[in-house]
Structure formats: structure tokens, C-alpha cells
Image (tube, rainbow, N blue to C red; front, side, top):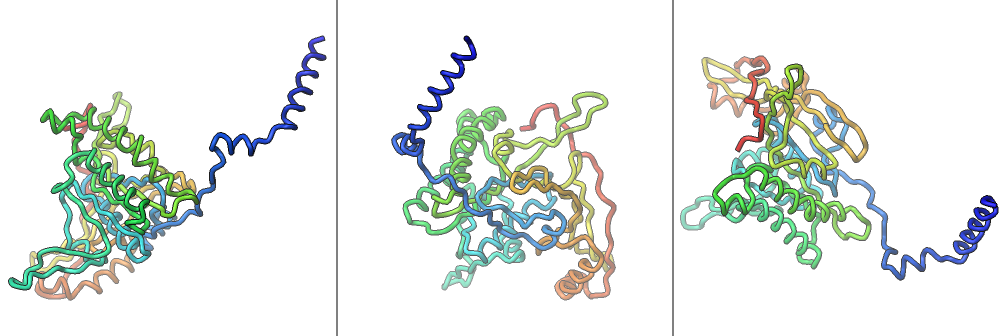
Length: 358
């Protein structure tokens, strides 16, 4: 008897489905939208980065994190992305809240811009070009960063900013939320909450949706994420590398590059030395892809960062770089007959914490 009822039920269900038009249902509910995503494109980074990681560069339409301890190559990667974007007609949008920006370094890396000269004094008073720049003069909080990004995407949607945008934020963890500012207390939980609300629930969704075929432009968000080292949870455990500002951006990111080690910077200095004078012209650094939801490739290796970008960690490339810059170093060292010296990798442990430091 039970089998008869089941067969009857199946027959009725099949009959109903045969007369049902799913496309008409989608139309009535407003669900018949374009679900196709654009073919994946990349903003290429240096050949050295590509050789070490087997990744072309920065994936467009995604949230990308560059994280690591101080002076490990994060800004080098960010500037490589910016210069490459300019060459492809993608507009770099710099959001500089850590205030370590250096226009001379940006120029060395190949960023294109013009000097604005005061006609009376002959002094450089500003820089202009194919970029947008904002810093702590106008951006004071996490909410300001999010509002700035959303406003530019709104202008883009209105047709007032006809570019694909590459947002470059340096850095998460360098600016508090509005509640922390008003209370005069830099509360890490409040800051993490603001990151989750402002980015996880808003900005990041807009960035991701720009990958769809229905979007006229493709926008990308690259963030340098400051880090701290958490103490091991047990005597046999290991310290962990933690992101400042919480993990909202980690969860939403599809591509994460970590520079250096967990408990130390993991870099070694390469110098040109003559008669007691020296020029530190490069650093060897560990690099690894920690997260990759684009093509699944995760790699690790060593790379050499210079004031002009990344080069491969091999003797030939170091020699070529030395020869190309020998004349520039001559003025500092008093000659070109200098020695190249590499320091041992620095393993001085960075302080560890139970909770995120203020």
C-alpha cells in the first residue's frame, strides 16, 4: 500500500513539473539575471614574482592581502601592482593611512606622475598624473576608508570615473574605527567589528560583484595587512602570525601573500661596501602564497627585493643589478670597486603576545 502511495505521489509530482516553466518563475521573481562572471584577468607583477610563485600577479576583481612584518616586501609588491596597472589603463587609487609613503621610491619603481612646479619659487609643490591619492589628511578612520572606496565606485557607476579601479590600501591596522577615536581608546575589538561591518558587509561585496559580466568595470582591492605574533597556546605549540584589524579581510580575500617568517622578519641584507661606507641595495626575503581561490596554486620560495622592484634570487640577476646601479652608488661610496656583502638572515624573534597589541 505504501509503495502505491509513493508511486502516485511521484506521478503527480512529475506531472506538475512537466507543466512548470522555471524561466517564467524566475522572470516573475526578478531572478533571471546574468550569472556569468568575466574571464579572469591579472595585473602582472615582476617576472621574479611570477617565477617564484607561479602566479601572474594580482587577480582583478578580487580582495588581495599582502601581509608580513615590517620591511619584508609588501610595499614593493603594492608599487609593482600600481605601475603595472597604469600601463594597462587601470587607475591606481592609493589609500595611505600608515604615512610611510615616499614619492621618490614610487618613481624608482616606475610609477608615472608629473611634478607640479611653483612658477615663482621653482619648487615642487605637488604631483599629478593617472592616479588618485588620499591619506590621513582626509581619512581618519576605518569608516572613512570604506566610505572613500564606496564613493569612487558610485562615481564610476554614474559614468563620472570611466576606469577599472585598483584600490591600494596601506595599511589595515594603521587606522582605528570612529568609536575608538571618539572614546580616545584604540579598542581592537571595536576596530575588528568596524572592519567586518564596513568591508565584510559592504565594500568587499561590491568589489566581488564587479567581476560579473553585467558590470561595466572590474575593481580590485589590494591591502597591506599589518601583523603581530601570537604566543604558542601550549608548551609544544608554535607561535601564530595574526592579522591586525581582525580576520574579516582574511575571510573575504581570495588571494593572500605572506612575506617573511612568523616569529621574525626572515630577511637578509645585501650591501655594497667600500672604505667603511655602505649601500644596502637589496634584501632576500621568504615569500609564500597562503591562500589562492583563483587557481589553487600555493607556493613558497625566496625573492630579492630592491628599490626598483623584485629580482630573482640568483647570482646572475644580482650581478646584473649591481652593474646597472654601480654609477649611482659611486657618488655615495667614492668609487665602483666595492664589495658585495650579504648578512646572515636575521632570526631575532619579534615580541609575541597573548592578545593583539594596541
